[in-house]
Length: 199
Image 1 (cartoon, rainbow, N blue to C red):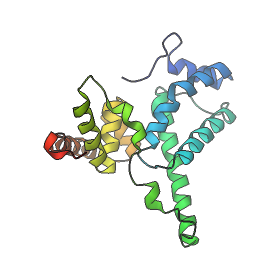
Image 2 (cartoon, helix red, strand yellow):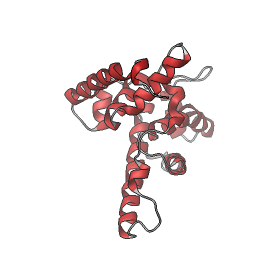
Image 3 (cartoon, helix red, strand yellow):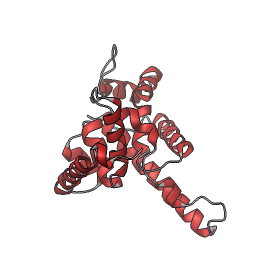
Image 4 (cartoon, helix red, strand yellow):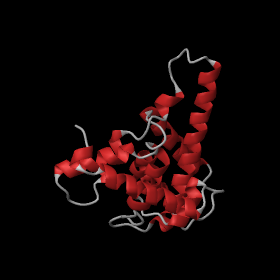
């Protein structure tokens, strides 16, 4: 379910406007609303937890620093997810260049950073009550999906984004979104069976 409203407070668009006006409490509430979602989303692109946390921290520091020049938005979630993805990709690209120049002497290979989703995002994958064995099947099946399919599924079914939002965030056309999700569903159907899951 999309996180567009706190339990007892204003909706995120209101919080965003209050934050832009300098309200520290609204800013803190936005952080609390989204820090976990942003972390789990970043786990699709990097397994370096320290890097992910640094990027999220940097993002919110920059938001507060530039609050007077940041414009309004009708989707705080989309704004933050697009921003954190750009920041993380920039960091990974810079790291890749440093590793290449250093001839990988420090042992930090790009492949280690892009090895796939960190298992720490498992709690987001359980959307309804199922028995423990089938939950494990689902987790393993999602981990087997290609990275782009996994991202599309995460955005569509766990972040409740529209196909148009996914298209913009992933920088692909609508048909490609359909293709990714359709392909992912086909792969999941093949993988989510007791016979195809190994323990």
